[in-house]
Image (tube, rainbow, N blue to C red; front, top):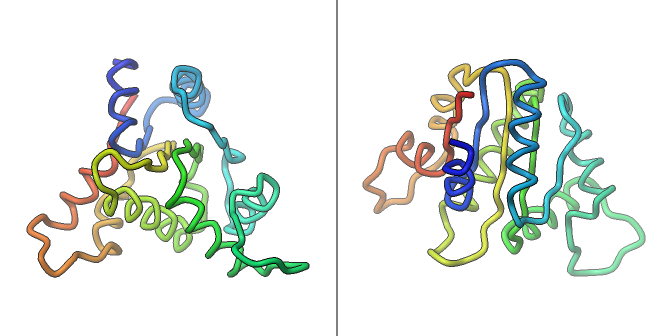
Length: 168
């Protein structure tokens, strides 16, 4: 099963749910150990968007296209979005169900949008989310993404094509 999940990670983001926090952490640890991606493991149980932003600053997961003495949060987030679109890294966001709801949905939307709009063979950012349960997350996500005019798939199909639910 774990080897199959490594193949799935090449194509989709993973949402790991079920069992205990320790078992989810060990499961995610196994995946990280057996991939060849540059990995950024965010602090588990982040609650506020500022915690996410602080980690981005600390690890310098953004690349400004102009020099300034200081960048504000919005600028860093814009640079971070560009950085995400150009990287082939693995982000690990554990116990993500504690994150404030609006930012959690925005981050999911951002990562799904990035993988949805890539062509086959292009580098993609990979993300592993873990939380206690799915808790209607896929339905919530299907309400916040936007469809292209010529899109034939439903919003839910787009979510399921880009996010694999792994119940351990």
